[in-house]
Length: 192
Image (cartoon, rainbow, N blue to C red; front, side, top):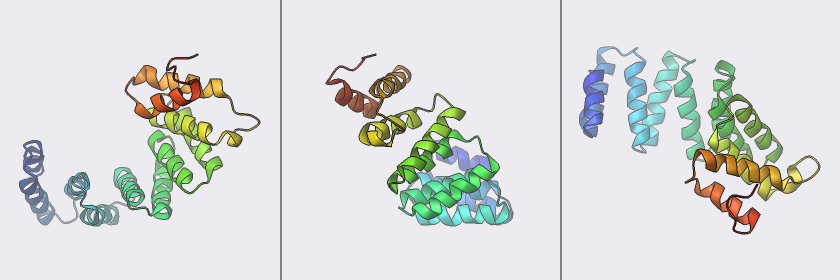
């Protein structure tokens, strides 16, 4: 049934996919996998309440399901509930301390709360785990550019420019990096 649901998803038949996942859940109510797949499907279609219910069902059966914890944190963040989002991301980190994406997401949440020092620390932690984490580089550069006094002693414009050029070397289409770099360099995109 799960395979049939996956095929239905690939074919773009959302309703048939939901039906197959629900059949799989009915056949084994304690199974985690079909419930998680259904939650992800709901999540992809912005059915937040349904997705949240299914993620909670997964976590009732497996409280250490890292992907369900992560996705639930993302849902809370999308809904503007930063307190719960942070709690779920911190739960992920108790199970997977080296999750660069979670550290980046935490940084974004701290930044939303205007806790800029925690945001910088989280972005730096993300980059220490995965130096190629594009989002964390852009987030850190943006934060350093917008709030230069947060840097320990002084604003290091050259460091921010190097960071943005590094991002653009990985992804030349990153519009945020291009715009910050344009502002920093007066319109010249590739300055060293």
